[in-house]
Image 1 (cartoon, rainbow, N blue to C red):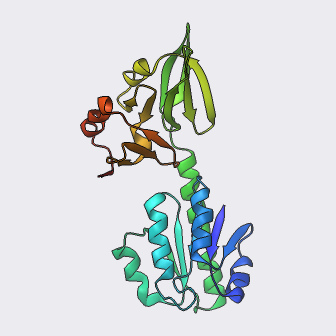
Image 2 (tube, one colour; image 1 turned 30 degrees about the vertical axis):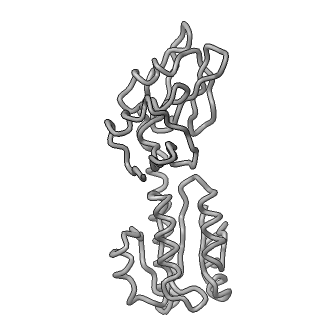
Image 3 (cartoon, rainbow, N blue to C red; image 1 turned 45 degrees about the vertical axis):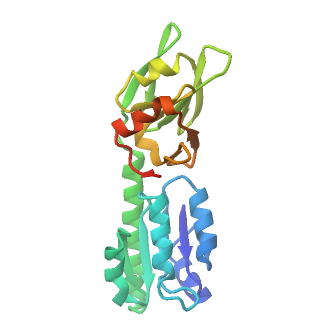
Length: 237
C-alpha cells in the first residue's frame, strides 16, 4: 500500500503518472488516521509544506514514527533546504526528492525510491521464522515468534487463545506454562502473557500495556515486577 500527502492537485496527478494504486490525501490529519489504522508496513510519500505550513509534513512524519518505525518514508518537496531537519528529527527518510528538478530526473528518482522501498518491505516480510514449539494437549504445535503477540486464557476451560499475525488459535495449555516456555514471554496478568517484542509502551499509572498493533492489556500488581525485570521499551508514569 502506498500513501501520499500532497495538497497540490497538479502534483498529485504528476506523481500518479508514475505510481499505480496510490492513496492520496491533502490533510495531514486524514493521512494519519488512514496510516495508523493500517497495521501493515506501507510506503509513505510526504510533501513538507501543506496549506502554507512549511513543517506540516515533517510534523506528520514524526507522528507516524511514534507508531511505525518500519514503513519507508519518502519526502517529495520543493524545500530541499529542509532535508537536514529530517535527520535531526530522526524521521529515517528513505529518500528526499526535489520537485523542481527536470521531469525525467524526477520520474527516475521517484521510481527508484519506490522500488527501493518495496524491496525493504519484501525483506521485512521474508524475515526468517523464529519457530517455537508449544504443547497442545497431547500434541505439539509450532508458532512463529515473529508473529505471535500475546496469549490469553479462555475462561472456564482448559484452553488458551494464541494471537498471531494470521489470527487466533485455541490450544490446550496454560498461561503459566507458556510464560515459562521462552525468554520472550512475559506474564502480566493471571489471564495474559505477552511477547516482549510486541510491546509499544507500558502505562504504569494506568497499569496498562499497549502492544504495537494497538491492543491494550491489563497489568496486575502481582506481575508488575516482570516488566521492570525485562526492561520493557517505554514506561510512562
